[in-house]
Amino acid sequence: METELAFRPETIERLAMAVYPSFALLAGIELDIFTTLKDGPLSAAQVATALGVDPIRVKPLLYALVASGLLRVDGDKFDNTPESSHFLIRGRPEYIGMRHQAYRRRWQTVLRAADSIRTGVSEAPRVYAEMSREQRESYYLGLHTEGLAAGRCLSAHEKFSRYRRLVDVGGGSGGVAIALAQAWPQLSATIVDLPATTPIAQRNVDEARLGDRVSVLPADIVSDSLGGSYDAAVLRGVLVVLAPDAVRRVLSNVNRALAPGGAIYVVGWILDDSRVAPLDLATYNLQFSTALDHGGVYTEGEIRGWLMENGFHDPVRVSSVGAYGADFIMAHKPH
Image: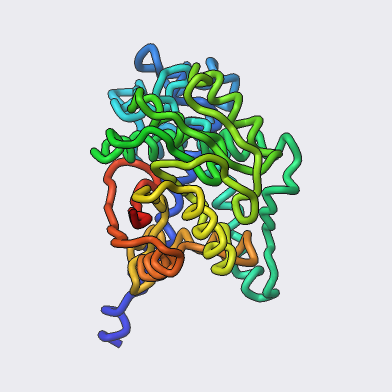
């Protein structure tokens, strides 16, 4: 009996409770709590009045956000933390609140993981070419700031001073290419993605006033020409949605588009060869196995092998801190 009492489901209980701060974050962003507090502290009643919401129900959310480190409380007044003030006030340059759409979609997908495993088919299918215009707009709105953040982190890599022409392969919203072009004025970039997606990238390029240096090319990255002869290629979040055979075909296609000595950057989610680290990626992989019939977060060894198989040399892994999905493996096409 003593042994039974001493042995508790600590890991189970910790994981079961771990989701609630995340859901508090989602509710806070969707209700725009942080923007409401942009001018200074307010009471729960004042927040409820400003938002037109139930004052009784909003109060527990405000305290949950305090407990989660996203708000502060002094007496009965709530205020943003410096981080929330910087990133979650609508209209500010670094606002990332639109990511709530991506968060909600990912979490809803993972909630179907057991169903997908049980049936053997995707329970939350994500077919990019078949998305409606509204679905595509919502999807890339949630991802654009993540692409910008990854591009800004990548731009700190000193080798980008050498490049003049870059191709962003499967560039989606264009966030990576835009951030790199903003950081390096000598750089011209081409964003390549499906014809249904490129209008979104073009709009973001135009809004960034980079149309003179960043172009958009509609194409199938697996089978179509990527255009031109480039000094560098970036693929962020591309391999995770492709089956291994398609990965090989894309990398071969990129090799043909690069000039001799050109560099390739495979950016984003990279598992250690153990497949259990980093923890966030080993578990994040569930959304891909639920939403897609192929792809997923591949290991460093798998990516290295595919790069070398398709003519790239000396792959090097670089870890990045502080940007979403910005780790990368870099390799070179021989001279």
